[in-house]
Length: 200
Image (cartoon, rainbow, N blue to C red; front, side, top):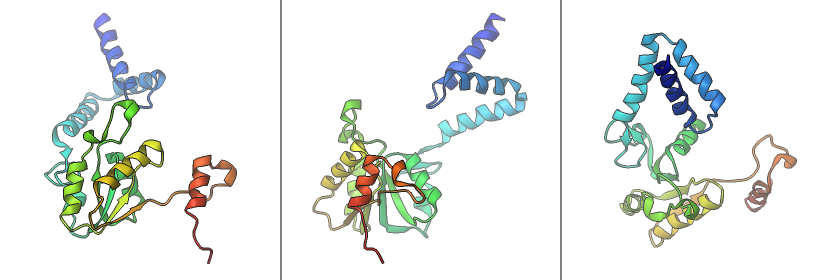
């Protein structure tokens, strides 16, 4: 019984280490695994193992890939002249989910966050600079998080690309469609005002 209890606690502890998962949720997940059939539990474990063993950074953009290049970089329909710079793979996935971007990406694998000990040297800036200087890129879209660290990261990217003949843009900011002004925070309202457009 002691060994069984130890195994369950280790499983709960493992789930509790996941971001956004508290102790109670970790316990529920562990008990869900216990209720799985052996085949289901082993398939779940195999899925985790496969992700860790088969995925690697894409050679071109640093997205996750099972081959040398990710699906996006291999897609001949993507516009290689349009390059969106994002901090993490999850940012890329969020933009892809929107479904209306047909360019390619570059994943920085982090952001400039001095308080967390992460400086520009830890990002994939050298690879980004090489891609842009190759001449195929006409526009670089800053897709960094709209906060202090994201803006600092975008500034570092812009400095690295200074002197390269390429258009630099950033994602539009401001109010979400359907949101009321009272729901918006100060930064959203400031961006909405500074990014205002002509009224038709």
